[in-house]
Image (cartoon, rainbow, N blue to C red; front, top):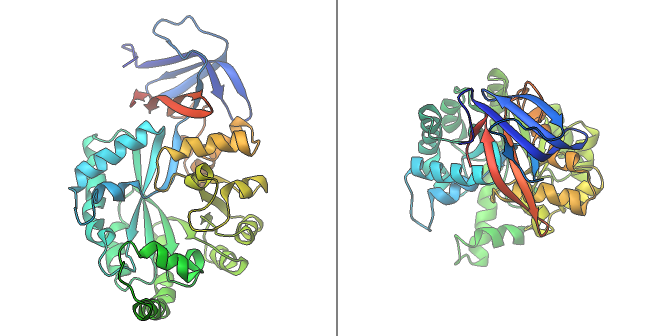
Length: 385
């Protein structure tokens, strides 16, 4: 670890990405906090020569499902929760993510679901990892509330009392709407679990889930809003498709629109003051895997505020860098989508920027053949990667 006895961290000969500019200079941190940023090279003893690499703020991930693949690494195989969390944490830090909101699904429309089965043990494992100091990134909790899930409230209420829960999103994956307006997209996605669905069986599934929505979604939404207000949670909507859905979200106190599926919804989010999140894999792949609006299109129309790695941690930095190279955004603006903007959206005042007085959450990054490579990561001034 490149530290001396005074817990100093000095990075020099670096391209430092600030709020509005990139400077060639040095960053000084002590006891986990940034103390000074200077132009020019420092001869300070123990300084790390960054060889002209970029220094950027530690990335902030607000919605990752990456943990799920470690909880079930092979179909039908459940992995112990704490080892799964530790493996996920290692991947996150290696991707340059220093603050991560682990997105835990509270409910699922699938009758047999790893999400339901592992919810409580995963929640407990994340908190255990935090308390023991075993986690390298700073982990927080994002509770994804499936409004049509019959037992949503009994699953949700016990989870809301920990200080690490800061974000709640309202989801409705009922076939025929939002992400699954196209029923064939729904069938294609879920066919991996139901290869033998006949036309009649699929029609019955659609009917049953529409009935669940009619029975539970509205009353569950009201109850979740009451709980979220009591616990002072940030609220997000999910897969907004049209203007009316965004208007409704704004009326009930939502401030973040996650993964709008159309340009119309993104335009409405902008006009109603909601911050828009899109998937970084959408940027990296050049479009949505389910036929929705491309994130780069929203970037080019100034309707993109934040990125989320969703299911690929390494996509977060890659996607932000592509905003710089493909949408012609400046480096500060591109990197703000994965640092300053999510920090503001989630109420963090101590991180998200390279600025004296803030946490020394710092990533050293080098661009090789157009690909951003994470070389080192510091979380609160401690070397994590």
